[in-house]
Length: 213
Image (tube, rainbow, N blue to C red):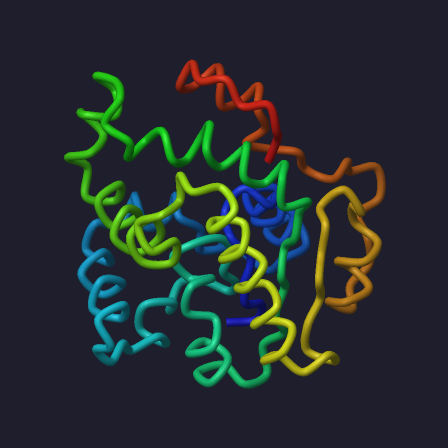
């Protein structure tokens, strides 16, 4: 493991995942990877319950992590990979909340036929357990409380991770700070990826996300 992601979803984590892979730090483990490996789900749920996890076995085929579920266990990953730097993706809290509410949260809130179908998917159930019921304490729809938890997580990362091991990163900054932090050259003539935007989400799920990434 060469890079550990500590940022919460809807902070440009998909764009950063692809950027890391372009820079040679891939494959990068993201929530989409967990969805594609249902055999991993009991391990993540066990980790949330305090059970030991063989991180080196889980991440044997990966060089980096980004997004949940890995970001929820960044402290454990720092101990398992003491030389790996940490990236904390950040975003304006108000726009983050509106984006998360109108995208990710709709997949677990039983308000539509799609949500009811997806609720049976193991990855969605894991996300509900770890993120909405775990990190956000079942209170995500309380906007101020959710934003407080979001900000608390970010501050805890800043407090816990040594400054020389941490990049606090807004994807709008593009390649330069990311490449400088990782000690690699920025790609020439390769635009920074901009993925999982509001338009991408609307095309896939038909929801209205006023934010992006």
